[in-house]
Length: 254
Length: 183
Image (spheres, rainbow over the protein chains, first blue to last red):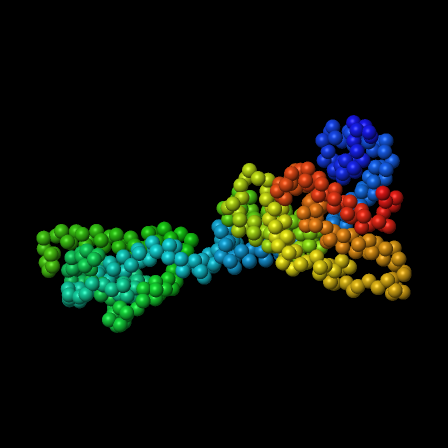
């Protein structure tokens, strides 16, 4: 391709791409050939080249040193929006735990399993620790509020049973037969007025349950709950209750 | 980026440290202010993190990154009608305006001429149409290939060639008097 075969307009339109190294080989050769022979296009190329150099220098001269703390600021924004994902590393691990403590417990899914186990554990503890005469009293089916009260009181009950579970079993009258969950009475040593509490809205109960401050380790490993002495004891007690229920001299109900 | 997709904070930090400078330069070139470029850079990476699950490894990461940066810069410019407010003498407003009649200025005549050229260039760049400015900044500052710029702007390589040529030609025309042997 020569000066005659490639118009000056076409060549000028390709000069910047030529300087950028963006022309295919064939086109590049044609443009270069034209430039060799065309003084007008050579002048245009010089001007475009100068403009290109100046603008490049200008754009690259802008000081945009990103501050060292920029990432921390960024992550703080992500954290603030609760979008921190699953960060890694010990520091992030600790921070995530703190964040979970602050907000994550309000997510029912996180704590639901452990909460259910705590409820079951508290039921068993109450049954074990209850005086027989109290246990045999007929009573209403457990209300949600009563279950909540039992759950809230679970740590104290757990402490009692963990301290001397065998002594409690030995000194207590023969325990009542194991009742089905839907018929179980759930007396508690709470002084709350159950009649009044029955009117409490479900949301309030849910909030109350979620306000329980769980052990820190359970924030990270909810499955560890199954290894807690109180839960293991629950398994033992359930087994014991099952044995007693099948025993011919269990007396009382049956 | 795949680790970032899983919420890995340290991987995200590494990504930020590697790419925040280029993104900030791009933003500064686009909006003409380094202070606003810093804010935009934060916004870009915030958007990257929020959109991380939509990132497809088939696409080049830098293309995806600059697409986000470009969109945010466009929003920024359009929202604030930035072009009309750019102080070309000092985009960040930290330095006093240059007074050509100031006797002290005569002592630094070379400096003043340079400063005048810088002002002129900043005004010309800010005055370019958005697509031309984007293509120009990505090419001049980040040295991206036309093909990649086309992916970012969703246009052909030929269109990018035309955008960059027209931008350079406008600058050349605006710099008449500053260039030797201007054609």
